[in-house]
Image (cartoon, rainbow, N blue to C red; front, side, top):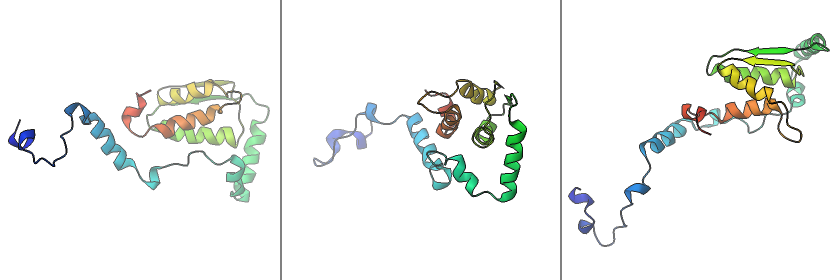
Length: 155
């Protein structure tokens, strides 16, 4: 202990020194620093995506026409989805899946994926919960909750 840390050398009105066990760990400090760097308006997504109908209201005629073509093409067909891996590409895939579920209104009969795609596939395979969140909403929630690498492994 240095002289500066000796409680007997501190002025009487000095607040008590913290217990070393109450101090944050280096891991806690690293996480706090990473979260501070990541914090900002550009990285804070909306808590819930707007309904598909609201998004489509702002689309042009050509986009809406193409959406109807896609829906007509898919209508009555059995659809399966194969989702590739690729680490952070899984978050991009979540957006593509959101479009397919919300706008193209697919209901796949088979879902497969590997690596990051397997994370998405597993959540979709759980299916919609009666009275609970839709499977696609759970995929979205998972990716929006991942802020730092350690989040992938934390419960």
